[in-house]
Length: 105
Image (cartoon, rainbow, N blue to C red; front, side, top):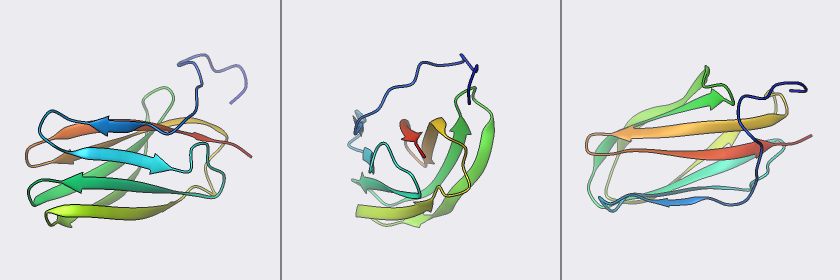
């Protein structure tokens, strides 16, 4: 995304620990063809994950499903995404957290 200066590009594994006990991270970061979003819930919840580009435009809904208490992993195909920074949000019955990933080719 040359010439697009919406948000500075950075990389690294980001672990988000929400105050309500929800933990989220993605791996690998940066990624090329796929990434895995890992999340842990202290209580069961409906969970929706949405991917946004570096300017905050919705790219796609990654998943929307019921998740039980405990750890979960969701494989995300990033093969069709352009190189650049992306952000994702996980929204549940009692939480709303976000993370970022860098897609490189």
